[in-house]
Length: 338
Image (cartoon, rainbow, N blue to C red; front, side, top):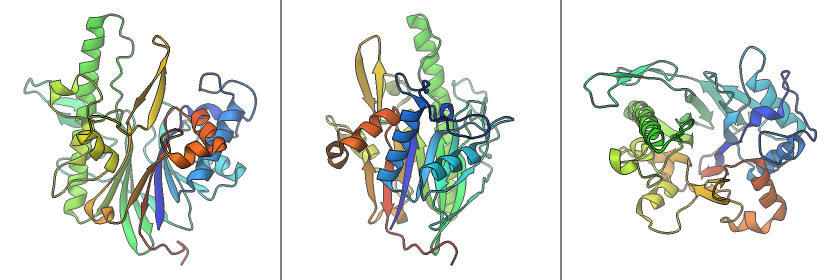
């Protein structure tokens, strides 16, 4: 059995200095009302509770001229004695929110292996797609290029793609009209990214690959009123349709349930003085990986084991505004050194 997870750690970068050292002090972290030491301890406690063999870290520490993602994550793992002791990054970005894999080298050997085809350029490149229905291709780029990996696990090779898709929030809008205009434009960009990602998935499935797509999609079935305008969500586009559909049970439930939808994120709405919960994080698998797989949302209130364990429950609430999602796959694992 192997466990793979995705976890969006809110402003993970704020917990490190430029040399990748953890800032375990009482200064404020990127989370409101949480110190850097408290957030770091909470994130580590969540990692320990999950005990995953690999975690796709969304909003991983920054990678640029002054800061490096891999040393920061590996220093974090060393400090807290995590067995996911090695890290890997693909194409860096300019948002201070990288996508990185933190993994147990005794369980797997990943390799950054970005590919391109006629229909789907490499994720660090540009796709021309008509998103505003004017018969003219619009240039689509990823602000956070997905991390495409070839992962050796036991006798099998998996294709894993870590994703942080475009946010649809109307940042900077001041009037109702601006909110609508920016929201629709962002929705178009988000759907275009998901079309690009699905084309890549189709290529991989056509090549006979076992595929896992995981991360934060900033989207989901029924999430906002603009979905009716475009017909379907970005998540539905990436999932695809039989016989080449990917599967995530939480997405499947969201597509059919009228009540009690699963959620993976919890945001404080200051103007309304309440929390908003949403399903944003997914682990989608191709058909050959689905049999015997078991998914878990590590939700502090909805998952009974997390709720009963006060230490884990508080760590989940302190660490991030997202909660991890994991999948257990019945794959025989030998030491990567064998």
